[in-house]
Amino acid sequence: MKVRQLWKRKRAFKLVETLSQEQTDKIIRLVLIKEGLIAEDQEVSSTVLSDIWGQGVLVFSYELVVQTNDGDLSATRRQFVKDLQTVCSAQKLQGLPGYPPLMVTDFWVDERQSLHIDVANIANKATAQYVHDINKVEQ
Picture 1 (cartoon, rainbow, N blue to C red):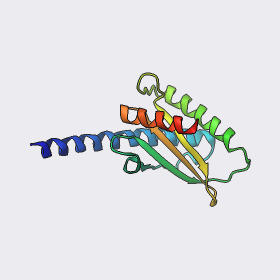
Picture 2: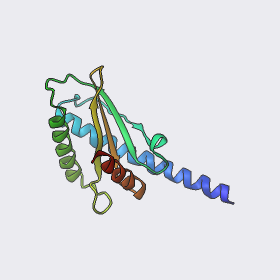
Picture 3: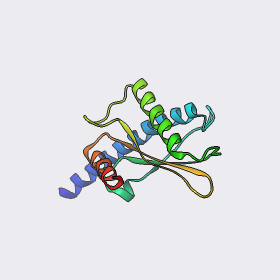
């Protein structure tokens, strides 16, 4: 009986994870278009990071090749976060009380000029705890 319950729970979470990923991909695509980082006809897909951070954590990673003209990545991140909040508001997304619906948890450019963006979809307590832990580490 317990094996069946565990299987049902995993299956239910996989559905939540898939729906959350689709929603997050849609919003991030809109932000990337607004930022001029991708064309309007370009699709966006993410990698699920729950295998790294643990079951129940809804964090998705994006990687795209960009031409960075300025060396101020923090300004680019601030604008991205601002646009993310605007799009989330326009789409009427809601997160857990006290949290934004989507939150950038990592934003960096590697040596190949690929922009990496990790975004948490704060739809459950496990993800809220992850965001809390990430914020503690950054302080």
